[in-house]
Image (cartoon, rainbow, N blue to C red; front, side, top):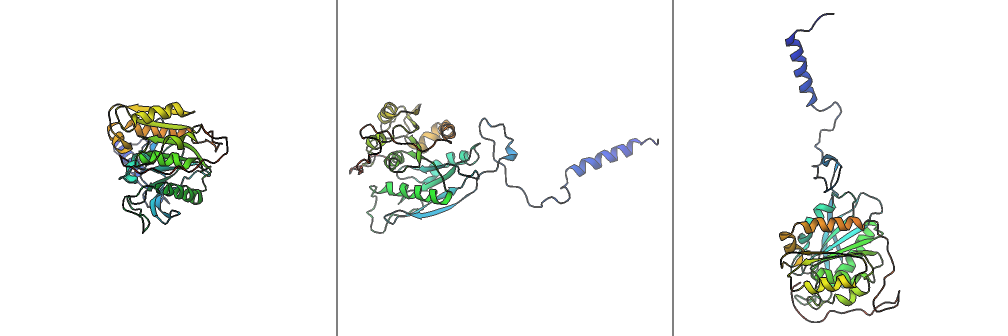
Length: 296
């Protein structure tokens, strides 16, 4: 057998190395979508994780508000949905850190991030008074209808921050598909919106409650909701920052806490409400917001 000289062996080795970096015959010429970092605790290689793509969402409320948001439809069939509701004088960008986690999570929700009327890209009805907040709950009702139709979601989780927490509590009783609530920096009477009475109608739903220990708006509400809730996860963070935006800036762990809780209720099924005040199945009187101000 003829022996190979060292130069020949070296040439062959270099040739193999060069070939290994070249595209295989028949491989697609276009680059693959950028991989997302693996979710915390995941053993799936990050190169295999492709984020759920988003698309613009536009729809209208019952009273004519032109609403906008971004919709991420889960690749998993019949996946539940999460609707994100921001604070007063904010927009859907407030909850973008949570969106970034949910679209690469091990279990994929359909996600709808919403701008309330008069915020972000959403418009209030033509005859609405400037700064009017009484009908904001209609925007969330429209969002529930939109995601139910667009993604055929069988269950919905509501995540609200500040006034968004009150809105989530207000609409949850009548929305049979709502199976869980996350209430960040909640407060009673923010811009006249009640919190305790609406929440009492759905207190048996799994609930995530979070706030800063020295937040004068949310401290009492977090304590009260913890006592009212039948299935609750409570997170109290140091400081006094209010709303998911500012609380999350100081405590980035808020976003991981929200994601982990959400994944825990991924398979939650719709259930009958258990009111503190009313017989099961009896529709409560609609709680209208009172006139008033305050942080949102």
